[in-house]
Image (cartoon, rainbow, N blue to C red):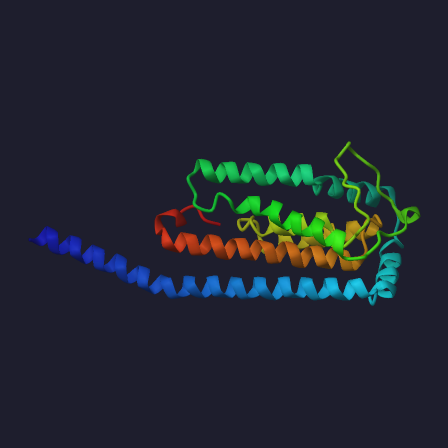
Length: 234
């Protein structure tokens, strides 16, 4: 009798804890979804503005400003960041993360593979938005390895920044200030190398973070339906 009463009390306490946590978790899902919608809407608006050429003068002025400093060390750093953001590198990282999560039977194992969805959106935008690349004579890029390059003439949005921003959203164990700092460096280096206009990098940031928030909101909703899989979450 006493044992049954004890077990019943434990179950009731566990139920009360779940009921207390549920509203907060629902709020996080809604908040993440709203932020994702806002960022993706901002991306679409920015794409429309870029297509009109309204930001051309500002882009040119900012690129010239970022290219004022010049040194061999900056060139090397910028090209190393570029190599790290190549599709082959980030794609391999995403697949590795997905396999590691799948091995631990996490319900959100698929989340890193969302990188390929945002990459498809990025490539499509490059084909649709009439934003030419910066003049080649301004380029400071030096190929460090024979990476794959697509024959795309469009520059908007930056694929490197898109991929970095999406993956940064998955590394919740890394302090936010570190991730923000790395994204700032990635954005600056893409402009410094004259591989992209500043508006391209802003578009990549909006698309990458927005995509990560969409994936995060879906994953959180799935975990809410299967509480046991919440272990090992971000």
